[in-house]
Image 1 (cartoon, rainbow over the protein chains, first blue to last red):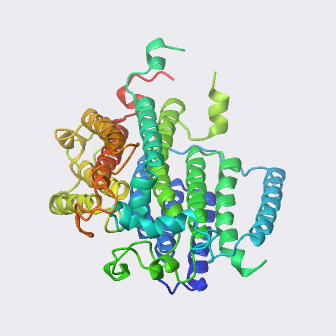
Image 2: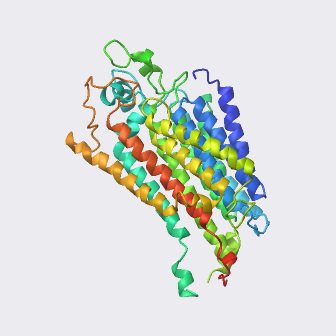
Length: 189
Length: 126
Length: 161
């Protein structure tokens, strides 16, 4: 886990960038969905190299279900989108704005702690919250997976809120997919 | 640009590509893909912030316990930051639930208007 | 749902069905292990719940939704989803036994009652993990079933757009 060379990380990030460009620009919708799946699996590999096996596991499974949902959406549906390219002025404007944004971001990143030495200091003299979690989690919760200890013990209230968000969006999907809607009953309106 | 900022910048490039899809594309499926790619990029950025060189996963093994039953300082000083990971773990699953809801909305749109093209959907409305 | 049988019913070929019959039990066992041992090894309720939902989705895809609908329907999944969400909240409220919300009421700190690296080592985290796993798994399964049952109105002959 400790031999993450920058080359591997850059290669995986380059793969993600390439995959997302393909996913955005390719005309066929099924190919776009599959390219997005490639981005997700690449992301899962990045998580694995970044020392986050929980996230890698979750990302792989979630990516599979997202692919099933999206393929369910695009397969056997006629795509009648007009293939007119957006105007050159629009694309140029968007590119310009994004270039400016990226430049500002890079300037901001240069002032932050560099990659590999996190913002959160871990000295006993000036302990941060991450330091305390790492040191106290096993004694206080008994969970040896520190991520789970934070998720379900120290910050369980956050998790309750996030479970509520998941519940809300699932109920929203039910509401959208209801068979009998107000529209079909009322005729035109 | 110092080399310490390159991974952050690359993840932000992914985010901007997703943002471009949301702004410039006329297809509902492409917009969904753009939102999901933006989601991935933000998750990746936050996990990148917590990484340390030579860091190991924040999972305690038997070798990391000292004699008094606590965690040894060697583990604390080499582990990556667990806090962003704990927050991103729920964010990934929220992304899946939101994707399911967006797919449901797109199915309804295609059902009603017979197309994925939002410019034509706008014209057909009313 | 499947491309081969737009009207549902038969599902996929016999090869896919046989493989599914063998593999699904192991996938669900794996998902359950991931949920229950989330406090020891990587994983936890979120990952394990999605794995369980994917196993059910495999059944629905392979056997068609009419046969799979005999075992689990969208309503059942929705009920289990809500019940698990309430159970998670209940675990949090039970924390008031120790004085505050989400107190780890089964395992007072510094107690030597449980040994580490075992199933019962982390007190109420096990209960929370189970509730979260069931909530995520059943919720996503319900959405998947709703998406697969959904059929455009044009096919039903009542669309008038």
